[in-house]
Image (spheres, helix red, strand yellow):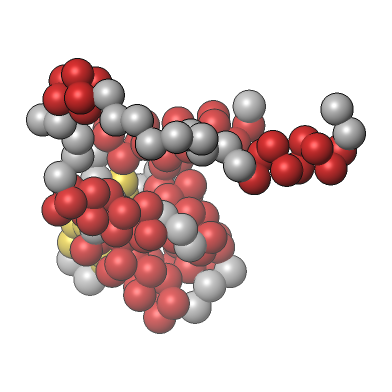
Length: 125
C-alpha cells in the first residue's frame, strides 16, 4: 500500500452504508453516559488540561503543602498558586485545612491520587 493510499483509507474510517443494528443499540441504550454526567466529566478533564494545575497535582500527590511552599516549589507567585488551587478545589480535586494562619492543601482523596497516577502511567507507556 502506498503512503497516500494509507492516508485516504485513514480519512474514510466510517461505514460505507447506513445500517443500524437494533439489538446492539437496545442492549446499550440504558448504559450510555447521560449528557449531564458527560458534561461534568468533560469539565473535570478541562480542569486537568492546564500544565500548572497538573504540576500542582504532582506536588500534592507527593505531600501536603502550604500555599507559600507550593508557590516556591513550583516557581509561581502566591496569587497564581492560590488561583489555581481555587480552580482545583472547585472541581473537588484538592482539599485544604487551616492551621492557625497557615492553609495546607492536599489531594481530595485516593480517587484523585489514582486518576493522577493512571494518567502518568498512560503517557509513560
